[in-house]
Length: 314
Ligand code: AMP
Ligand code: MG
Image (cartoon, rainbow, N blue to C red; front, side, top):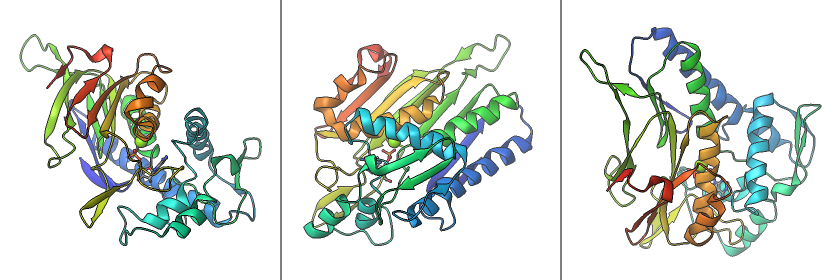
């Protein structure tokens, strides 16, 4: 079953008998997550933090604090390449929105002065968040789809589902493995395609066979606009205020789905590694043993981490 949620097509396919109520529960949960985390829903908890920036602390659900804390951890270890406080800059560019445009250098400078993740204050005892400067804004778009995929997997597992494919706009969580029809019902791995960054959606440059794994991609083709032949994509740099410029066209992070909140971690990592680029990204990844990656360069070259050697069909 597919529905529009979290700004993308969210599809959940179950490969065994399941009650329709499982899907109802999943999509109800996605809508709850959207009501908490969406910057586009006026009454969302995230917006309420943003609206009260520089003014007051805001009480929020524990799950927002949990995801935000994770996001701040990635900001800290990547020295801001991943930055959940980029809201003012993201709103200024409006890439993927109704009025994308190239801001002036002064506008960029002003927005950047309000994007420090170090000015985000969490008080876990009170369950509150405070943005220290007026005009600051959080944007958790780089991590929340992964969190939503993990939550979906949890709901499916609790309902007894063992084989399912969750795909939230390229953020994939493959639960269990498929089974052959027939008497032996042998297990077959999921074959997941890696999107070709320069072709139509659904055109793959490589495929990986996995079971119980999450695969999350960040790329220049996800959201962008073009002006005078230049492509401006949606992952922005806290240093320049511009879309991140490096030799990468996309990066896909692959990790086992049994780790705690695996898809959320992979989502945060894919954006972080994309922002760090091909020079710093691979060595940064070594901090995460067991996590593999496929890098697609703008030249079309495909590189994979050692653990994927022989598992990637190109
Ligand atoms: P993803 O597709 O997971 O890589 O996330 C990209 C989204 O995260 C963008 O559409 C923005 O909402 C937000 N974003 C943009 N740049 C950054 C950044 N450097 N760090 C964290 N989030 C970002
Ligand atoms: Mg991400």
